Image 1 (cartoon, rainbow, N blue to C red):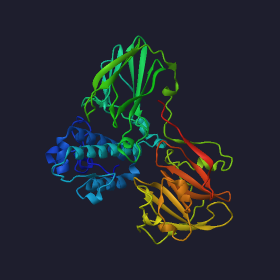
Image 2: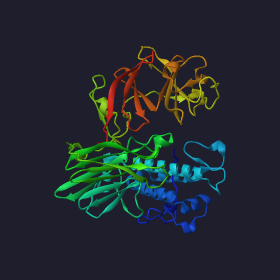
Image 3: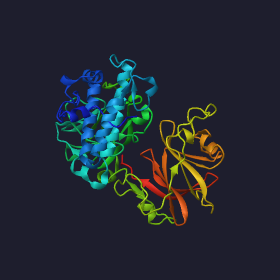
Image 4: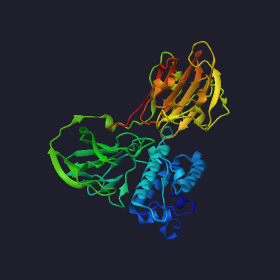
Length: 473
């Protein structure tokens, strides 16, 4: 939902970046704001706060990905030019259409906030690559609080007091110390000693990682868990947030019990939820040591593979254990341009998800034994990355196959035309042990990766599974 870049770059480019300003201030000097978008951000506290958060995420990305500094900078500049458009034909899922940039509507402001929030999540993902261990020295994930201290957990506020820990959802005050999140679910947590030898841990994060498309997918609801004295008393409770507003107003934990208060009234953007009915209980919980073992989330772990053996584990990218890559010594097809691109087909009978190989940007071809049948055939391939089809597609050579329309989300119907679309999966083909394999790299960041063999019938035979280690809640 976001282009490469963000407005906080202005501060970086002009030496105006600040790290100790209040959350209500953007990352650039409003006295020098020139464009209508800059002035809009300065006048809108929610947008200013979103810009500041994005600036912090960008600073982390620059610090921990020095090898990508040039591409990060170029991407930010490109985004500055494209984050808002007044040309309706250029409107897309990753930019906002302003009919009148000088007089933006409430809908325009909401769109821009979504763009900023999505970019912040993307930058955090870029920075949080665990193999180097760099962030272990930068972020204390288990923030240890002291009685009387308050911190920001994103939009929520945690208050540690003598005798209790209280969390107010959607009510973080400006200027508080912010607890940074980690991993694809942006998990944040605090430890609060509440007296009497008791300690409470509160953990909050995305119900699932932000997904590429759709408001609710890009801004998942927040879930939280609570432990008292290493016993879990609340497990993955849904607190709401972006899609339907906050469902809860607060949670308070004491040595004796737990109080959870619901939110009432119509949820409003960037407005603290109102207190509703409260329920008190005396939860004793269950022992749960997993939450106190600092296991890096999101990384891929290879399960034993009888067919691929050690090669299965080698498919995890050693530079980024959350991703996959075919080792350089493993042979792959030699793809050549198919000489076509951006040609129209008749999609009228297939609806919104329809496309074709010729409609892709760079269709290409190679000759190899795709189905392990003992016969090499010509195979076409294309990559797409848009809101109706994000993934890879392969097709066998037959008359008109390049311009044949197909519904990327209808596997059975597509394969009858010799077309094999992998929705939300970008696929790399490689050869090993005399066979052809397909390595799946999921677009959905909570999904597992793996290797399959493809048969002409459309059956996908799983030969290697790379399970994703999840953040414990």
